[in-house]
Length: 55
Image 1 (cartoon, helix red, strand yellow):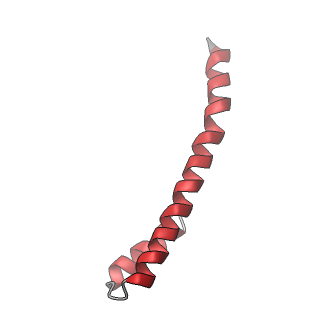
Image 2 (cartoon, one colour):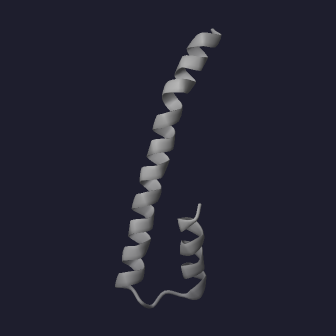
Image 3 (cartoon, helix red, strand yellow):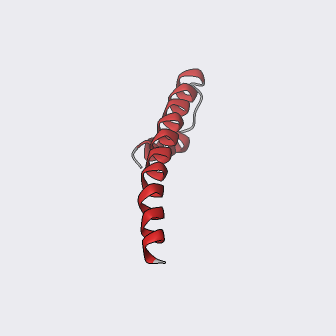
């Protein structure tokens, strides 16, 4: 019924947001590590990384 859908949405949304935030943080950390470890990165890859960090 409608209330079960509402209850599911209420419980599911914070987890989804939290998971996205964690994944983004890990992704940014990995990108920073890659830039630090490998100085030979082409310009388009750097701009792609910068774009990802602002999503």
